[in-house]
Image 1 (tube, one colour):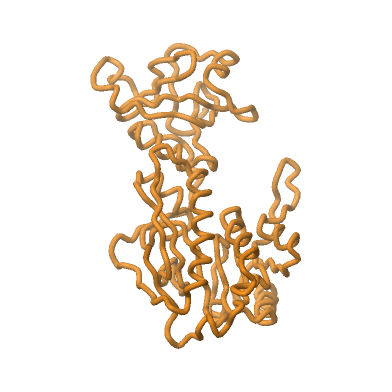
Image 2 (cartoon, one colour):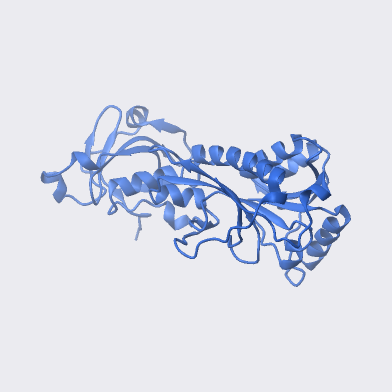
Length: 349
C-alpha cells in the first residue's frame, strides 16, 4: 500500500473535523463507498449531499429509474442533485448553475467521486478546501478511463487494485493518496472483481480520510500508461480468429455486461460460459477447418475451433430466451453437423 496527501497549502483535515462530504457517484460500484462513509464514525465525516446522474429509462417498461446512489440518498434523507452537465458553458448551463449553488450552499470540505459519469470542470475541483478525491478501480497509471475492470481482465493482467486519487483536470492523471493491490484470479469475471474492488475502495477511502493530514502526494509514473476505453457494441461479437485464451478472457471481462455473442446458422446467440482448451489441440485434421467451426458436441459442451486452440462452450442463450446449459440447449435446439459460428453478425442479401 502506498500513500500521499493534498498540497501543504490546504488546511489540515483535523481542523475541519467532522469532514463535510459531498459524494458524487451513480452505479453499484459507488454505492458501497457511500454506505460505508454514511455509517462511519460521525466525528470523522458527514455526508451532507449527493450528486448522481439523472434518472434513466430501465426495465421492460423503460420507466425512469433512479440510480442506486440516488435511492440511497433518498432513503437516508441526504439532499441529492442530478445535473445533466456540470459545464457552465455547456448544453445545460441551468443544470450546472443549480449544481454550483447546491455545492456552495452545503459548504463541503471534500468531494468524493466514484464512477459518477460526468466530467468535473475546474470550478468543481476547486469548490472544496480538500478538493475532489476519486476512487479509481485500477493501479494507476495503468487503465485510466471508463472501463478499468473490464480491460484488466481482458488483457490478462495478474493484478489490479484501487487508487484514491486527488483529482485534477486530466483523465485520471492526479497524484495518488493511497493505493491497494488485488490479485486477479484465473477465473475472475468483471462481476466478481467489481464486488471485491468496490469493498476495497470503500475501506481505503475511510483510511485515506482518517490519515489525510499526514499523507504526501505521489505523482503518477510517466511509464506504463494505458487507457481503459469505453466498451463499444461492436466488441461484443466474438472474433473466432483470436486464440481461445483471448476469447475466454474477453468473455470473463464482459460478464455480466455487455456479454459476448456470435451468429450460428443465422441466429444470434449469447455465450455466457466457456473455457479455453488451448493446450489440448496441437495437431489433427480439425486444424484445417475455419475458425468458428464446431468440432465436437457432447452432452454438456460444444467445442469450437479458434485461431489457436479450442473454446469449450458450456452455457448460452437465444435472443429473448433464458440462459441454458448446453445439455438443455441442444435438447430444444439440435445443432446440425457442419455448423459453425460466424465472427460477426451474419449478413443476408
